[in-house]
Length: 139
Figure 1 (cartoon, rainbow, N blue to C red):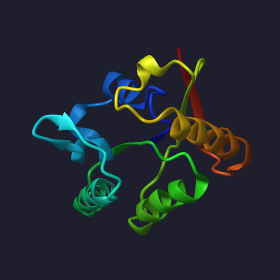
Figure 2: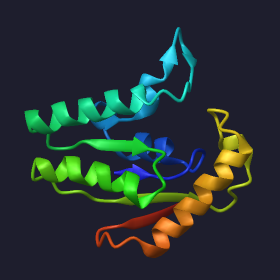
Figure 3: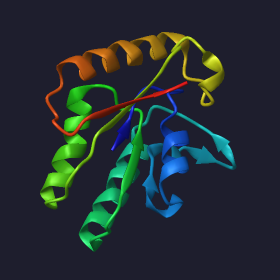
Figure 4: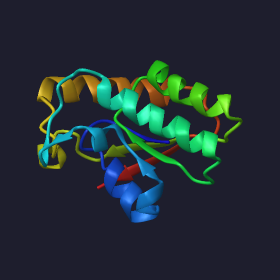
């Protein structure tokens, strides 16, 4: 599970480290006619979870979830899904040295929302009790 705010480098890390066929992201379900479209409907997240559920049921050895979840309660929903299938989870929290560098924000997440995501991420990393968590700082 690779998680972190928009622009942190989650997708870059996933693509650099894992087989593309293993990666599942809500962003994969946000493209319409070749353009990224975040409509706030929650449908891409539901489709992503359904795909992860399908892969877990199939018994895939590796499933790499790339998500902008930054709150512990959102990450816990992913954990519950994995644990329903007795799957092990490795948590990789991705941050960056300069969260104000909006060049990395390729999806155009509003600055106000980004600020909220970074505050949530800081709180989650400080308070969350997942023992397998790893923090990666992308520069």
